[in-house]
Image (cartoon, rainbow, N blue to C red):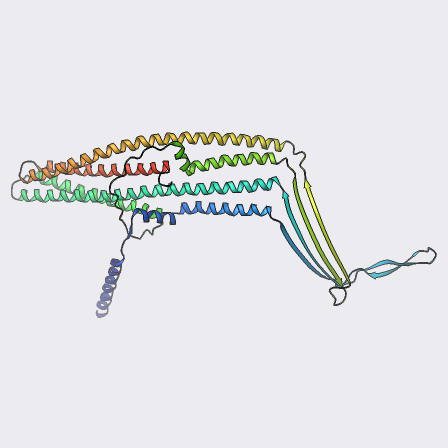
Length: 447
């Protein structure tokens, strides 16, 4: 029995230590700037695009190697274990008789060779095209990386604002629950004093417990929003976070910039322009395929042979060679002409896609501006409604305390206030979200 008591005390002590340790772990605080830095550092989607960009850079390095000379060095040693005896003419009978043959050793015991070769491409249209294509591909990847970064930042700003919204909804639900609980307690006191009916008491209780359910649902939604908040920035899911950004006054509706300045700041539009330039490169490459390829090579070799233990000295050779090669394509079955035609069609497609995207961006800007103006009007209306609802709750509580109105009227004004506060929070989030979209669409934040 004493051992069980001791084990129970140890368990309580361990539990106390765990609670103290967990209490010392403070929630990580994030303002909007710190959160955006965290997202750019840890977001996996952005990391994948960055890896693709790095891969494109290595591709440029690989293609650039084609312009540099290739150098090779080769050496070898051969030990002949048997003699290669061959019948060899060594003399002739005087007066023009038949040749005299004798078996002679035709190889050496040791053979040592060393050679070096250098190849250099002087002109190759295909190599030039591959390099231009790789360089352009790198620029496209870099532009795509910037576009991805801007989109991720915009999404992170909206998620931060959305998380703030759901957390404020929890606060609104909790405040509404407390007001309903106060009404219920006041009604209960009046009922016990005989100054109110059981029906009003039951209705006050139902209203209060309904608010408890709504508050629990709001807390669940807040936890789900925090999961998204953590995942986007690579924050551990077990880490408690606190949002400390004080947004203050909402940004004013900006002026609509000129379309050309917008296009100059759009990384996605720049990617399309680079793709159009890539089609121009392909067209030039198709024309250059009619050009010859020119290359040069140089080789130098040394050899030495000896018998017995000697590696050198009995027989030495030295060879050097310089070559110039020209490859002129004459006929390829019409392939090159078809390639030129296909490249011209790709150019036309790129021009059409660029014009289409330009019109799409202009239409999106006009639509976004209309939505932003309408969101600003709804935000102003939501503020007026919330102020009116606050005043109505204050008046109803005073009137109810003086017995001028019923509990139903108080509950109704409290519900109206909750709806007005939710409407105001939603209007603020929608305006801020559209403003972030406007910054992304116009390139305001990234210029």
